[in-house]
Length: 421
Image (cartoon, rainbow, N blue to C red; front, side):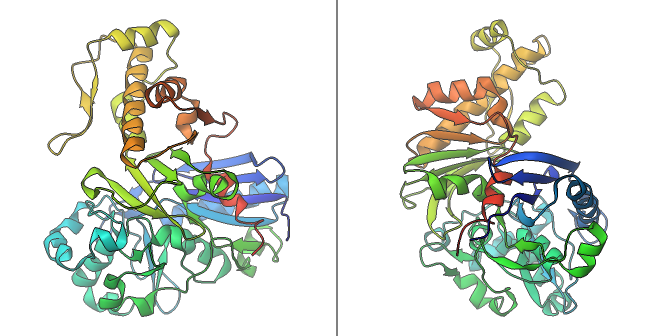
């Protein structure tokens, strides 16, 4: 087994794209480069600015390698994104933004062909959150262009392909509410075979697998050695989960925070879930299904507070708990919102109120999926003391987190590079 010292992790979230260098002695980030991740409105539909991300990654790789001698590259990205390549390996379509509601124009007919939740563990979600819905919309709206698609890649593997030239797919992204995967059997769903998409799917590879060395032109542009291995990569919440998959005695719960709060339960049964409650079955990097629940907690934090978040004092936390103002959860009619005008409250009190609300939402979802054991919080919320302390009080379970890293995804993705196949 080869032990790499410094792993460059490409970590592309919905809000930000990041390159982190993880040193594998202590699994800590020793360098980070980051940009905001925007959506372009030009072209046939809103889509991710992959050219801007790519140029950023090339610059960042060159910078961090000059400082830290990178010896491997791994990839992790958000889910619900798919890359369709033409015969020349170029994008046949822009990478569609999963929040695009135009996809719902075919929702009724798509729902008639999508597999049942009992087969995929995938609930019916709005916009393009089900990749099957994205593919069906593209196929029906652009039939001639879609017919020329040669290769379908999940988003982490698209970036691995850009680096290595090797096309692959992998189960954590395929098993992430896509409608494309059968978690119980580890195979593609009936939708993939019935629509004729199977022949376009890149070959399945393990997340731990080295796809190949860095392409020569990329090595030349970044200054990295051409022999540096590029690993297949995985879905970001599964990257946060991976250290616990490999190390932790079950049952254990993991809360991966960012734009989405992903609540995962290792050791809990992956059946009996209610798709109407935004619960689903995910698949870990070893191919095993596990129950999951999710909500847009990071997005709620930003929308409710904007730039006004502040570290609350103990007095402000007490005031928040006694306040008549509350945060109300989203419903079918309304988004997450304040119960009353919060303008008279201090920034710290408002931050505490939102943090308490998010802790309650997280605790409710842990209960929904039958989660047990110690709760590990990963990502930005691990630095939110009001959130972690209230989550512990609400669940009456230990809550652990690491202040030294803003996200557990980078360390998890770096671990792909050292596991012996």
